[in-house]
Amino acid sequence: MRRFILLSITILLIGCTGSAQKEDKKEKKTYAVSKTNAEWKKILTPEQYHILRQAGTESPFSSPLNKLYTSGTFHCAACNTPLYQSEYKFDSGTGWPSFDRAIKGSVDKDVDYKLGYARTELLCSTCGGHLGHVFNDGPRATTGMRHCINGDALVFKHKK
Image (cartoon, rainbow, N blue to C red; front, side, top):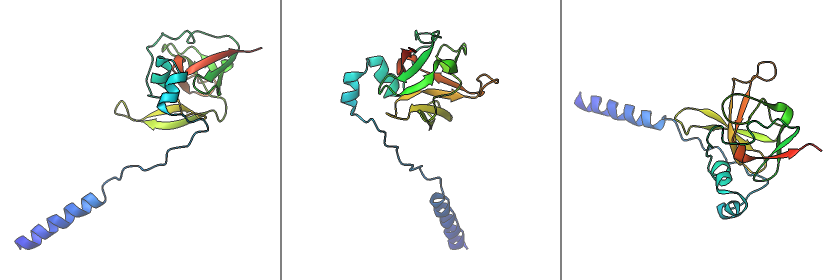
């Protein structure tokens, strides 16, 4: 009887370990613009490198782009890809430049667990640079989404 109980417990434990969640092995996307860390450090400021390549976050209300509402386009500071039109920008009051949508095909999404829960991370679709995160508390009259973007990840180009 003891052997039967011991054998049952052993089988149960092995069965549980075998069906435990496996680590997600999704493939990393290959981006059109790819550089080594040393190459990125040469072309980006320390702040841009921290945000775009290390998924950092700038302090709220620190970006001059936060209150910029001139006509133009916001580009990726790493690879110059156009990401956001100025007409997509709105004042979210959060302290970071906020947009209700990106230029179609310019931004990729990924899941970020850095704070212990799932958030949707936004990445430049050309170089994979970290831009910020998206939340569903944006303007209801348009998309309802808020792309909360680090200003140091962006370069603004005035409309001509």
